[in-house]
Length: 324
Image (cartoon, rainbow, N blue to C red; front, top):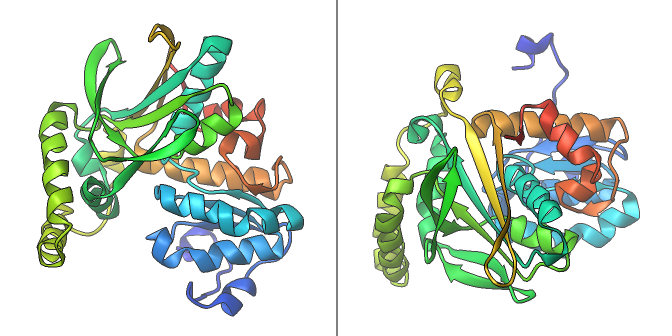
């Protein structure tokens, strides 16, 4: 890969070796990481950035990792001047952008934000094996929502919400998203934030039933092993979509702002390239801005605080992610 880009310098490090990781970076450098699962192998890289004062960008979709990252490293990152931007990809920047725009448009009366993720094209073929496996395994993991001023866990797909996407009503199932962490911090008046996945809207009801079954089976160690084997087979072959498949897919995020009464105050639709493309472009854009010293708030922060409230929407538009 280095040879394909004019012979870039590269070094090899073990992500389980703190000393080796620490030797790679210094103050003001930018560490961009896609090494996961993050809750298993992502901690050493994150700690190295926080300790050294290097800026940090990752592609995690694991909300538990983001929550723990804040607990472990936010204070140290603020001390060293490290801007840490976890989940800075398709997970979950489009939803943060759509939710922020909806909250601004809805104004002071905005009580809740619901965000739905959708896509065009034959999405299953347009996903990498890792993403397909994450989707399948996510059916057995709890989903975090923000309700009445606190975070709470729900069963995946426990709720179904309907969104209007390109003029058509589509179902989406309750799913995880760091929007439940970031939007209430930015808009304290919010009392509820939920995230939904509508990649397969026609399967919303079957997926709801499958989630209940999978959650029940996972309580038994023996059944859990059988379930894990089935989920691995569902993920399909290794690798990710080629350029032709990526070109067929567009990602969309829809945010609905409601008043306490349930009245819809604003609906915002954000569109961009395929999930894999928008993740690569977002991480590259963030890394470039941080390398230029354009990061705003040190610590473990969301994209709005990390890039700046005024710059964030414009920066997203630069890579083709913008309000429709």
